[in-house]
Length: 80
Image 1: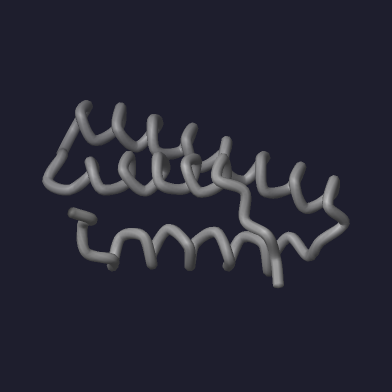
Image 2: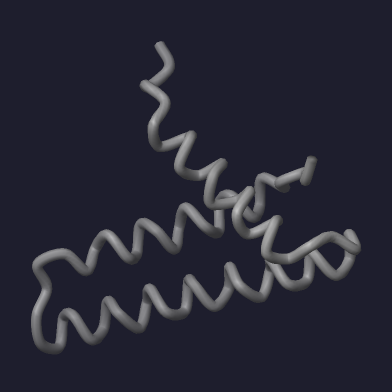
């Protein structure tokens, strides 16, 4: 089982939040938000690659585990 560091989950969540902000935007606002999403996604990809290399793990499997962890956190009801 692949260990998923919290930092990777935070980065992926941040990228997903930037992607969600694209909804309904057009023109310059869309272009600017698209760049923010692209930058956040690039950070995720770089961190995934670095972690997979350092841990000598399969990068694809790590990425899928991160996406699954973020999705599960999104699907879980709020605590309290």
